[in-house]
Structures are given as C-alpha cells and as structure tokens.
Length: 456
Ligand code: MG
Image (cartoon, rainbow, N blue to C red):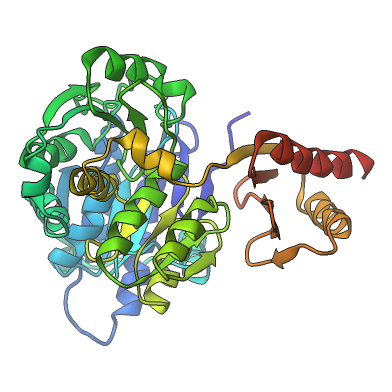
C-alpha cells in the first residue's frame, strides 16, 4: 500500500511517482499562491515567489509543477536552481518575495521529495497557516487568473554568493585564513556542496570535498548520523584533516568529525556555534526541548538565557524573534543565526565553529572536551496519541519532583538529566530523548519510560 502523503508544518512530503506527483505539486503551488494573494490582497501588487531545490533528480520536475501552479494563479516565480534551504530563506528576502518554496525531502532517502513553504519573513508557516493552505489545497479553491494575468518565470543564479557573503559578514575571515585549516567536506551529493566549498575557499581552507557533485544520487544514507558517516570519519583521519563537516542534502544540518576520525555528533554543532556567538555579543538563545543541556551550560557561562521551544525550525525561529535571540537552533545540527536568516544553516555552523577554533587556537577535540559531557539517547516506538497521553501521565507520576515543561509533549528535568517524550506530528510514533550525566543514569531514565509503556 502506498504511504500517505504528509502535509505538515514542514510542507508536503511523499514518495515521487506514488503519492507525490506533478499534478499534486502543481495544485499545492496553486494553493500556496492563492493563500499569498489573499494575505497580500490589499497591496494590489503582483506577487513574486522564489523557488529553489535540493539536488534530487525529481527536483526539477517538482519545481516546474509548483511553478506552473503559482503562475496559474498569477504569481511570478524566480527559479534559483539547486541550492541549500537556508539560501532560499536568504534570497526570498533579498528579492523582496511574498514567499519561498524549497523542493526538498531533507535527509529522507532518494525516493522521497517534498515541498517546503516559507513566508515572506523566511520562516515556515505556523500551524494555523499550514492548515489554511492545506484547506485551500484539499478544497481546490484556487484563485486562477485569465491568460493575460498569468505569472511569469525568471531565474537568478546569484544565490550561492549572496548566501556566502551574508555568512562571511558575521565573522573575521582573516583569523580563519591564517590557520590554513585542512577540511573534509561531505555534502552527500546534496545541494550544499558548492555553497559550502565557496565559503571554505574564502576562509582559506584546504578543502577535500567528498560526495561533492550535486547529483542527488546520495553516496551514503543522507542523514548525517554516526552510522552513515563511517567512511567520512575514516577519510578525515587518513587525510590528516583538522576537521570534517558533513551536511544533509539540503544543507540545513551540520555534523562534525574531529581529526582522529571521531564523530563528534550533531548536538555539539549548536553548542559550539552558540559558544562562539555568545563570546562576541550579548544575546539570548532559543533551542527546542529535545536539545542537549550543553546549550544551557554554554549560555549560563555567558550570562545568557535559553528559551526552550517545541520541536521544529519554525517554532525556534519564532521564539528567537519574540525574545530577540541572535543565535538558536536544534540539537540535530541545525544552527540559526538571525543575522543571516531564520533558517537552520550549515554554513553558519561551519563559520562559527572555524572561528571558535581559529580565535582560541584550539582543536575541535579540545573545544569539545571543554563542554560538559552528557550521554544522550534518542529513540522512538510506535504508539497512538491516546497511548502517548497515558505514558506521559504515568511517567509524571514516577517523577513527582521533576520540573515539567508541556510545550511539546512533556519534558521532565532533573538535577542529573532530563527526559523528553513527544508524539510525532506526522506518524503514530512516540519519540523519547533522554540525556544524563552518564550512560548509566540515561539508561535508568529510559528504562522507566519503557516499564511504564509495558505496564499500560
Ligand atoms: Mg535538512
């Protein structure tokens, strides 16, 4: 049986040729264009949307389909080609667009693709707006226009450089150039290789770019996890590089490998980037509830506050705006620096981490060793919403003294660790993230969740 097409806060995601077809993509384009026309109905001006895509072979087809949908409701389109997701966020504001579209399924395997929507502020729509667009799509209530008013299509190939320049403006490139770092860059044949390579070139790095060509034929499973980066880790060690950077296919996530070929992990990406920024400017931080406590430690040391949010880039970005945070993100390697834009950005992560290394003259291993050490376990199991509620209530009974945050599922904070239990928005799955000062304590907390689940 074909999987159900997912329409969530991250847009539409499905398997190309099964539940995600050109016809569906065109209608989703119609729906987004119709929504934008209603939103900006008082302006009376013709609207423009910019569209970029990751490198999947199905990307061009879906770009054309969404573009056709947008044009059919009278919205102009600027195609910015194969590009990272954060660059679409940068370009839509650079071109003063009413919205943006990214054709990407992020870290999902090649058979998937997706249509991610961005509003004019560069952030994915909040839940109520997502529902509004979904309703227009399902009702096929499209604001089609006559032939003379159809949207026109243009292109712009400047996005890579514009994105890189924004990132460079945050840091001191000379400090990094002087170090002549040797870097292994794995862009997993995704969209981010060329942009990352330009950035690292400006920073005077000697780049060994692996899986570089943006063909969309991923050289390994595309999520930048330890398991998927084994070969890259070997490459970093063998080549004598100072650091390895691994991106996901749309380059909004960044994982780090140290010179010994050790997978540092994505949780460190945000902690290290925040450490650099907070050492330079006074600001606060936003991070989702599943993000390591390292971010609290880093913020504490700089007198900054951490605002915890529901999981999801848009939730973090909106909290950053509300609380005037320059830096924030998610523990999956997603760093947001508002000075570039409200989108997770692997180039921002690389720039901040190399800056921290250069300005402290420390290796990535030394910088990691300075952070408090935690053991984090991320797991999931099948359960419906009702069971999720029951589990959460029973776990709460087991920890009457825990600090509880119910912004997104339930997070229990203890002196020596925390548990975050949340129901997936897109599948009948409960995600459990446990972090503690050591493995033994983390497993103890996780076992309590499992015992509760078994008892229900
Ligand atoms: Mg991604």
